[in-house]
Image (cartoon, rainbow, N blue to C red; front, side, top):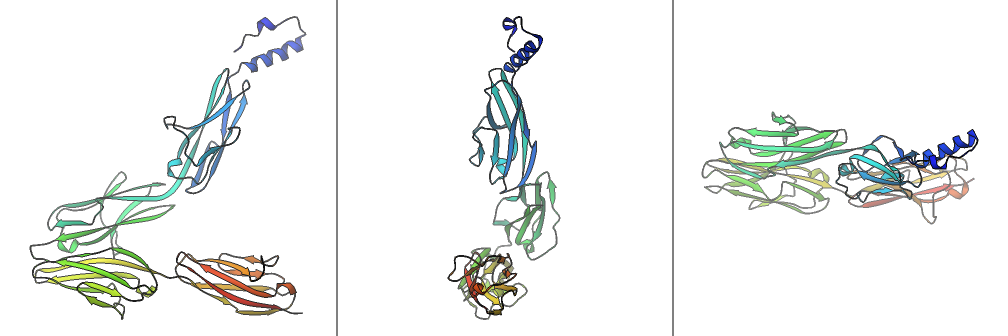
Length: 390
């Protein structure tokens, strides 16, 4: 605080009061607050905090830091405004979660206030060991599943092809599947599922149990594949054992596609369609037993668009409603346009489900309308001829 007494002279009481207030403010450290004090966003959303100065001697400099971050610079997606008062976190991620401190500094000292940003995100899962695991029959086996997420995710284990939840051991943030002495029929693919309010994440591990000498052991080239409709797909299965095992392929709960071929443990599926999606099983058999390995195939297809109706005849003032439909892998997006025109008619309304409507058409609304359906595989378009006559 500054000493103002040398400047106090024989002034009137009102002037002395004003002089005293100004002198006191001139020597005051900043007082600050942050609004809001806390904010919660989903991953990918943005948040802003404002640092407000209630008092203190000018000039005042504002600085933002993330608390407990060893004075490191703010991440690239965290920016401050021109005067330093507003902090904005754009496209927030898990690393942006935490406490942020605004510090105001002037010649008399400093003041600080904090705000908390909570970032919710879907679970991220990690298995130890990651697999595939090749283990000896009778040995103890365990696989740990860890997950991060906000809110804290719940962890469960199940076997692929079954909806039953397995009995596991859970401590803190680790859920462990264990076998005191693993058996041959424990071979398979096991799934750890982590779930919270933001989503569900699954990670798989293949467990291969090696039996007595000579017993078959089957392995596949890949346990999961995502392919595009119309492609020719090959699945490779290798099997060891003595005598050499016989290798066959089957499909879970369905027959193999009728055009398939099998040569030397290689299954070939020409021109696959969406109906060919599913779990394929390689079975190796000899006189000592059998072994199975699994491949999950998902077939994705580009959209095929159609419109209802494909032609519309209207009078001025009538309502127009067009529906664009599409078959294919989801999600599918729809976009309407009018050929030869830069934009749709005034008052036209297009929805996410592919509907285009105009409450009252005019003569100038005649033309050819185009719907384009798009997914991550490709796109397709459909045309509608609209005729408006008096």
